[in-house]
Image 1: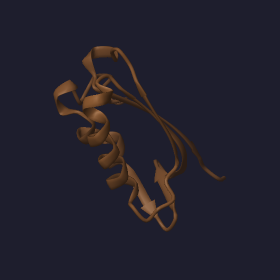
Image 2 (image 1 turned 120 degrees about the vertical axis):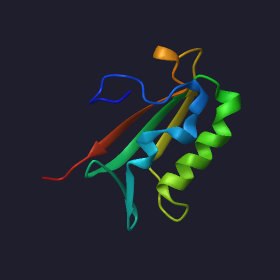
Image 3 (image 1 turned 180 degrees about the vertical axis):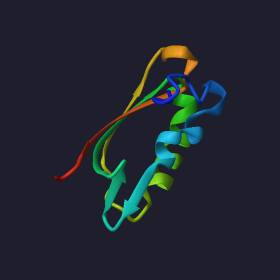
Length: 97
């Protein structure tokens, strides 16, 4: 979902590699940032777990970098996601004031 447009921007055919979520990550030193906050945890939901896990894992490593301590991750296979989405991701991030 695009929060600004309130519509799906990536559909099932695009799969996990097309996730704008991952392209918005910024790696700096040994930390990963999203919207200026340090990413602590990522939960990923896949509607086709066996078909998409490998691609999602590669996209995740590419986004976070192989030499970075990656945030905690959970990946869950689900029967379906809203609006025909292939991937749904949720993050927990902290920002120091």
